[in-house]
View 1: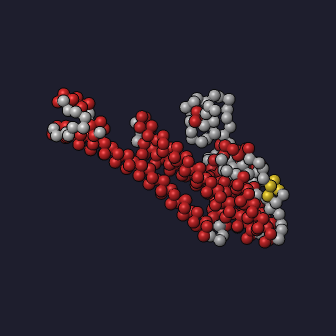
View 2 (view 1 turned 90 degrees about the vertical axis):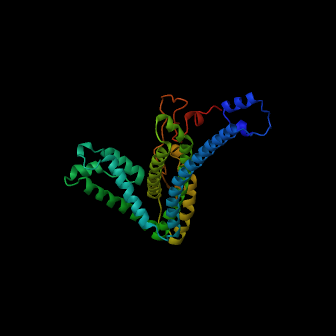
View 3 (view 1 turned 120 degrees about the vertical axis):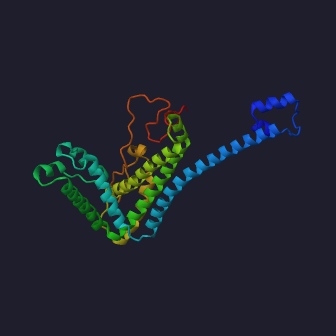
Length: 319
């Protein structure tokens, strides 16, 4: 069996010329040296494979440490109001920067797009263009401050209606559920990346460096999604004035019911049933779903749903 696994054709032909029979003890120095050399090569290759897998696992473990620390911190906190405030600030800054590039001229601003994004992410309709027309002193930084003031006013009104304690409990339930679901999706995406990353070698790219680079990008997007989706749900939920204890209990129950309806799969967002929170309809679409265009996808192109799989292995799979 050693001959079959490790020896080269040259060694096999040499032994056949000597008249060696299967099962016969190998004593010739040339043959044993050749087999030992081949075995060392195979063992070295196996070591390189294990080392590469370990390096991939190191990347995953570092990300896991960050997420578990975040989750443990949330679980231990009685009040995550400051965390939500930080999330809101980060999401607003990213939303504004996407439509108003920093240090840009007003002619480059996409005001209509900003108004639509604020409606989608924060559930508020703000007449930004009207503000700009009426106030010559409203430039990029002052606009950001005015927007934050408006968003805080809308959320404080919600807090007054629900009660601070009830809303703090609801915030914690939602953020934990968002984090758990998005983390599971991220792990699946990382697994797809890992299985296909070796193909980068054909493009003269280092697979390990490519994996580190892309996994970092995916992880950054994960952290942004946790903030954005948490703020989106909390901004759209509607409450009404009730007994504080009853309101807290109902909000806590609705947190699980709402999160259960949402798998945070952006591709499925438009198909979600619109849930009701305390009798008020809530728009909980978490992101703009990828829309399939009329252009036919190739079998080996990435699927339009954003899963990261090839079309033929996803929605293009033959039943």
